[in-house]
Image (tube, rainbow, N blue to C red):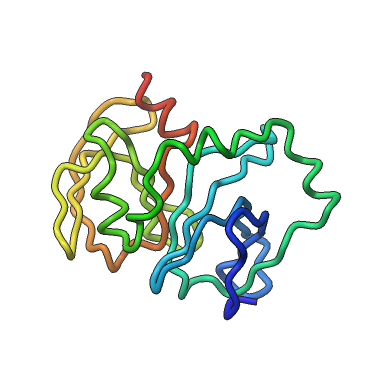
Length: 168
């Protein structure tokens, strides 16, 4: 259920819409008054890949993985991914974006259906908005985009897609 909160480290599946097939899977890290922070699970590769941060008000329901689902983990790299961020300071989208290095890319989703998203690095940040220098799918810098923090549905940090774009 969405009213209760998972235990840190618990492997869970999150739905953003009731009875939706669009789920987010991973290891729960923490919840604040406004956010859920999770390690993102890449089911194709069987490993954890970056972190996801989303508004807890958007979580409609969650469930714990079944024991047999845990066998999908081919490489348990949770500690490696966790060592890359200061989770204690992650309380709001603002504080999460504050700790990104100027080189790190972030995936920002404004659409609850996950159809449209932006990938870029933070150029400027204030309490109400972020200015991103966008990168296209070829890994080339393109234009900038200003987003209101209230328009962000969720963010993904440090996953293989963003890291791949940085290497191009």
